[in-house]
Image (cartoon, rainbow, N blue to C red; front, side):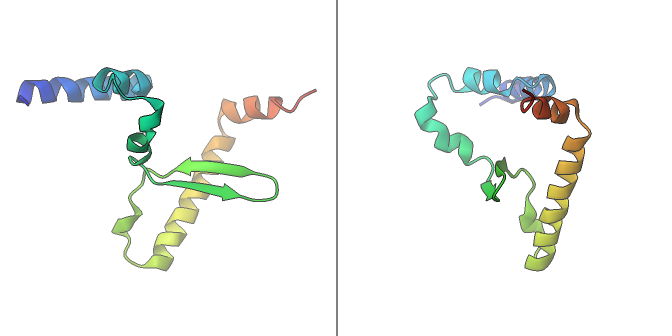
Length: 104
């Protein structure tokens, strides 16, 4: 693997991240990857499904909480991040769009 190839690939990765084209980018890197191979993609981030009586939410966790050694502090940080995530979503147009789904 040459340094030039790595530099080009990293630039392409950044461009696709900015343009939200990761599916196309991954397809270009792994053209033979099929849906059956999704274990590779699932392993990129740990996943968690949260369920209450009203909501089932599946999330992928991007943050590395292993840096927080104390388990209670790690949990508090995760819960804080969940609250932040919900508050951020509340401020987006997508939150209203989602609520429109329930219109008659």
